[in-house]
Image (cartoon, rainbow, N blue to C red; front, side, top):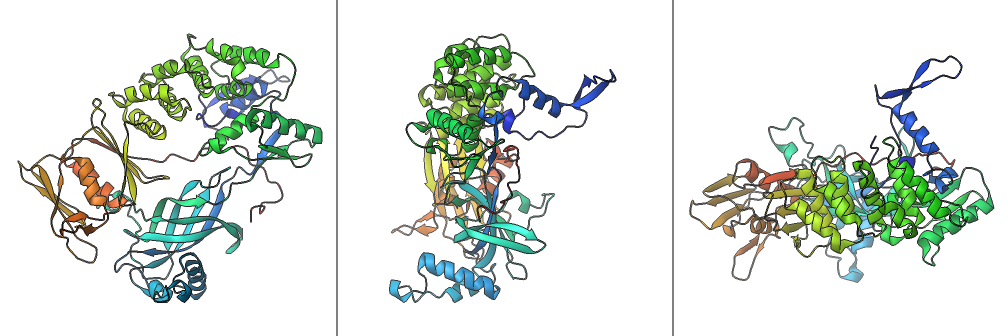
Length: 580
C-alpha cells in the first residue's frame, strides 16, 4: 500500500477509512475472523515497525501543525468602470489608515497630499475587497501562499478581472461563535495581480464564474515563522533535554534548532535550508532515534533494511528513519539498490539521494523513465528536490525530452526550474508573471501554466503559430491576424473601456507573442507599441484558444492543484489562540 508523498511519513499522515478496503483478524475469545480496516492495519504495522520504536515520534506529538487562517481588507485598482464607490465606514477608516501608513498617500510631509484616499476609494476604477487565505503549517518567514478576494456585499462591483490588489495587512483570526470573529496581530501581507479563472468565463463552462470573487496567486507573504513545538506525551525534563540534544546534534551545526522550554515542550526553529519543505523536516525529526548506545546506528540500519521488502511495511517511514541515522549507514542503503523488488529499489534510492549519494541517481532515473513504474512521478519529483543538482539534471532532461506522460514531463520541468538549470531561460513579463523557455527537441511541444503559489508559464520546445491566422478573443480583448505567407502576427488590443491600441506586430514564435501580450502597455520613443498589458489569466485564455483551434501545435496543460497534504494528527492544547 503506497500511502503518500516524499514529504510525509506514515507517522504524520491522517489516514481516512475507505469503504470495502479491509483485511481481517481473528478474535482471541470467539475465534471468529473480524474485519479490520486498511487504515487500522497500516497503523498497527507502523507501530510494530523499527522505524517507529524508539524514535522521537514514539514519545511525542507536534503542536502547531494546523493551517493558520488570515484575513483583512484591501483595495483593488485598475477595474475600469467595474468597481464601486460604496464601502462601509468602519472598513473605509481601517483601509485608509493602512494605505496612508504604507504608501504615505495624502501625506503633505511626503509630498503626496495631492492624492486623495477618499477619491481613490470612491472611484469606479477601484473596489474594496475582503481578503483571506491560510498559512501552511510550520511555514518560515517569507513563505508565499494563495489568497482569495471577494467584493464586499451590497457594493456595485461587477468584476475584479484585470485588477491589482494594493498591499494590505492580514491578521490571524478565530471564529468564536455565530458571527463572532476574534482578530489577532498582523502576521502576513497581501498584494499582487488578480486572477480570475479564464475557462470558467466561457459559454461552454458548466460552472458559471462569479467575477466578484478572484484569487491572488502567491499573493500572501508570511511575515514571521510559524511556531512549532514537540510535545512529550509524558512530561520529563530529562527526556526533553535528550530530544533537544538529539535534534541539535543532527541539524544544528552549532546552532540551537531545538530548545527544551519545560518538561513538556521543546520549541523548534526550522532551518532555512528546509524552506518550502518544512513538513519534510518535521517528518525527519519524528524519525530520529533517541538511543546513544555504541553501534546502534548500524544495527538499526540492518533491521530497517530487512523490513523494506515487506510489501505492507511503512516504507516512507523506513526511509526517513534510515536518513535520520546519518551518512555512516549508507552501505546498508546501497545494498538495496539492486534488489529484485521495484518498491525496495525506489525507496532505497530515494533515501540514498537525500543522503547525497550520487549512486542513487541512476536507480531513480530508471524509475523516472519507466512509464510502468508506479513510482515514476515520485522518482522525478525526488530528483527535482535533490540537493545534488549537477547529476540529477541529466535524468530530468531525459524525461523532458521524451514521449512520456505529460504529468511526468511537467514534473521534470519543475525540477529543472528548481535547480535553476542553465538551459531554462526565464523572463519576467510585465512584472506580472514568469515565462520559462526550455528548448527541448523531442517529446513534442508543451505549454504548461501554473495557477498555484506563483504565476508561471512554461514553453517547452519551440512552438510557432501557423498561418493564415485570424483570432478574436471572446470578449474582444485582442485580435490577432496573419496572412498565409506572413512571418509576423498583427495584434490589436481593446481595453474594457473600449479604447483600441494601434496595430503592432510579433513574430510567429509563441514566446515572442506572449512577451508582446503581457508586456506593460505603452509605446516606445518611435510610437511603436511595445506591450499590450494583458494579465496572466487573459494570456492563458488566448494561448489556450490558439492551441484549441490548431493555430499552435502544442499540448496545452494548466496546473490542477491537488488536495492539501495531510499534516498529521492534530490535538487540542487548551490554548487555540496562542498565535493571536
